[in-house]
Image (cartoon, rainbow, N blue to C red; front, side, top):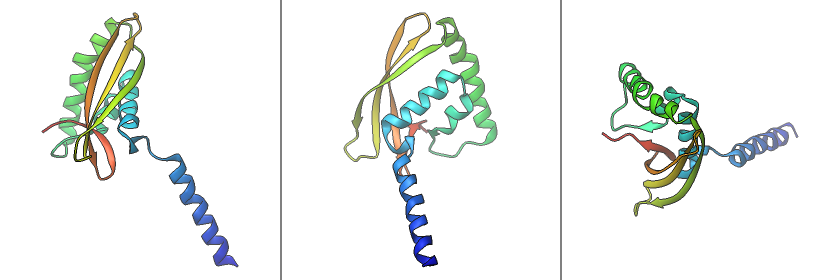
Length: 132
């Protein structure tokens, strides 16, 4: 009886994890998480959501964060911040290991900018393709 209860409890926990799912389980979810970090100015989280061909050192991550703070942040601030974002069409690569996701940023001043982002599937998790 005790063993049966343990198995049932474990099944409930597993179902909860599956039901909740990970936002990085889809290209759309990974893109939305990335854009939310960008909207909040959380550049450390932004970098953590990117995949590079080689793992970044702490110094390299710090350089990327500094670059976002010096280049991207002032441009976003000039436009009144990012008011909202919308994730659009997803195009999967033929091999299913990459995707292009269209999105639109809407700024506080009312202007908007359509763009797209490349993602790559790494160990079952969609990540922003940081390139080489």
